[in-house]
Image (cartoon, rainbow, N blue to C red):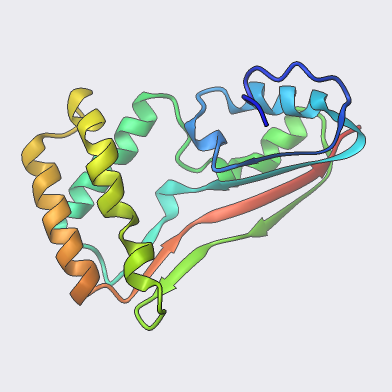
Amino acid sequence: EGDAMRLEYEARFDVVTAARTLQWLADAEAALRRMTRAARPGGLLVVLDYNHALNAWEPEPPAEFAAFYSSFLSWREMNGWDNEVANHCPALFDEVGLQEIRTYVQDETSLKADADFEEKTALWVDVIDNIGPTLQGAQACEASLLEAARRSYDDWRRTGLLRHTLSMRATVARAC
């Protein structure tokens, strides 16, 4: 276990992996270079991450939440974070010299009929509560938007939301 941006290992591991990590890095390629260096020749590099710009709700979410989500994506862009990093991983893997690159759809879909639907769809309530103040501090949105987004989303997910999909991909490749 270690920081992908600071890995100092040389050809040490059979598998080097990161889950939901590259989405938070402005220089994902640098992290992948370090991860690749840490893998033994023939070892695997495995990355699971999001495509935030491709997440989906059915039906469309309330306007207040849509406005918050737009602010969330803009804030991520302001930080240099790729909102479609999962789709860009194959090209990044190629750029750092990995081979046998494969990508697998790993979308997490929650349906109203699922026993854990309320728990899984509460994710965005948690994001508003926990990351919202940071967005507000970065002037990406105002407190009134956070309050309206939380209230409207929480009500809608309990009454109107039928399907929620988090767009994710797993990318796997071999180190040379």
